[in-house]
Length: 85
Image (cartoon, rainbow, N blue to C red; front, side, top):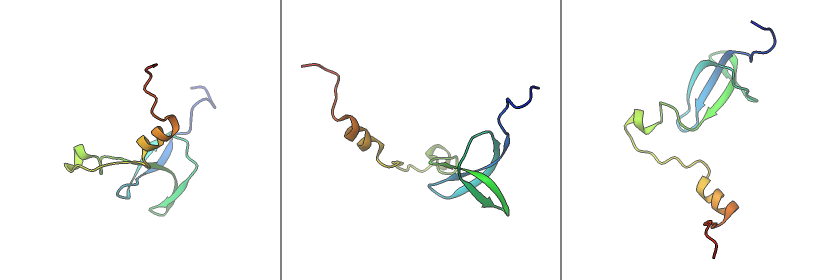
C-alpha cells in the first residue's frame, strides 16, 4: 500500500441525540469534538436517528423535526413555485 494517502481508520463514538444512546465503531470520519467514553477519549459523531430510535426498529412512531427544516427552507426561499405568471 502507498503511504500517507489513506485516511486514519480509528475507533469513534456515535451518539444518538434523541435518546443519548452511544456506541463505538471504527470509522474514517473527520470530527472536531471528542468524548470520554468508558475511560478513554474518542472522536465524537452526533446523529439524529440510529437503530435505537428509528421507528422501523423500535415499532413506535415518533416525529423527528430537526430544527424546523421546512420552516427554514420557506424562510430562505419563500413561496417560489417555478410557474411564471
